[in-house]
Image 1 (tube, rainbow, N blue to C red):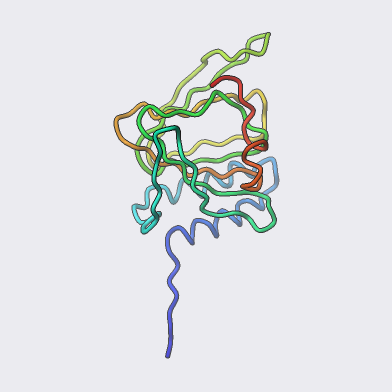
Image 2: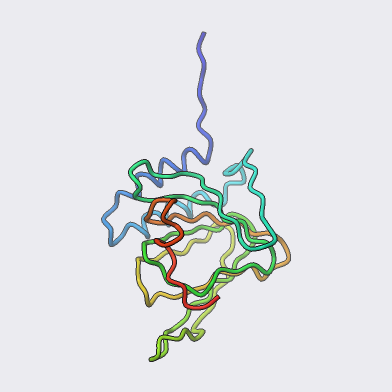
Length: 172
């Protein structure tokens, strides 16, 4: 008897992320973002996945943890009105929007280190954003819409380091 295994859209994306995450460190975030952008418009991407949100804040769901601990892929569910803190990253990051719309606000740091708004962009399905580890690349993601949003993020640390290894928080 022959049993055919089919790869899902998510399986393909995770395999492509694994390859892109081997790019040189200086361009890794851009390589991963390119892969994300190509997959975000696929309505089958998260087919069969139960990814609930919660009222207290945006919710991270682990999609893949690199066995070597070099990166982790998470789906974030954003209910209306939910937002990240104003933060920079201690590691490279790439994200893609799969559903809904997020607003990404960027901040400049004043002389005393306080963030001040500098620019804002709407991020729609299929769009990406990315950056290296940089304490001066400060941003906030927010769901200012009326329906849930879903984004997929890849961070250059293992999932168990998300608490201290990802965000450098400037304001909540």
